Length: 268
DNA sequence: CAATGATCCTGTCCGC
DNA sequence: TGCGGACAGGATCATT
View 1 (cartoon, rainbow, N blue to C red):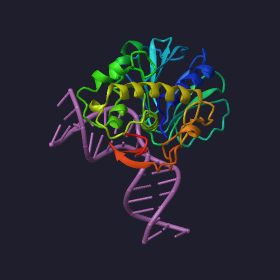
View 2: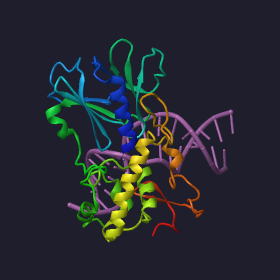
View 3: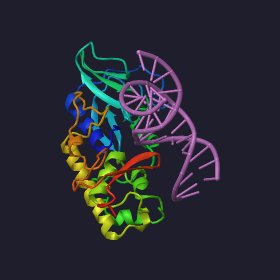
View 4: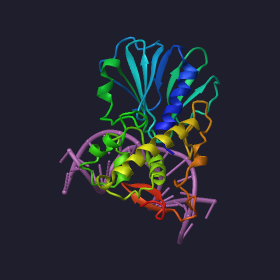
């Protein structure tokens, strides 16, 4: 399924390992709209080495030595695949980053929602939406959630998917977090007790760390930079499951247009 | 400001 | 076998 924080983090680490300090020589757009240029880009953009590899929420930000940055969002089906072969499957390649020799990074994206924005480093913020804290940072704690949820009467499931509340969570991990925290996804965010908030914080960090350690979750499209799947799908407890670990039937409901999986017995 | 719904897009799967 | 429709869903924009 779609890349969320652990998948984006895995891709970022893969890019860092494969590209490292190798110059990026060219960026080609093969699909109208995939590559977007800020009007103030610093010329020349390429060739340029990457001098900082950064992730913010689900965004990958490559800071180039040319004082520009590549802001990449994979959305649902985007993949960044490193290759040195000439005959890679090219059907859904929407953009191409050329490195040295035959080395390239293919931006493969079936549903074409992904984007690569080229903008001056000084204007990165103009191209990012309002993003909440990083869930793995110290600032993401029960105290933060308490105040962030004050006026949020929407279901906790929907609120945790809101990137301006916390950056990087998507449908799969929110389902898993709420299951581990034993919180029913329909509960109004501002009705949660302090102890439930603490549990959500602890489980969020736990699930994300485990998923990163397993190179992310490959339910369908997601792949690492070397085109291999992640392995956290083997550890999912409720997402697309029939039974929870205690043998209860998992219930599937629609919230904000997305499927929520939860255990009506374990999650209150 | 909060919340909801439509939109974008294509591959896959299901029912008839 | 084939076709239409539902579904997958992150982020953005419009609407209430």
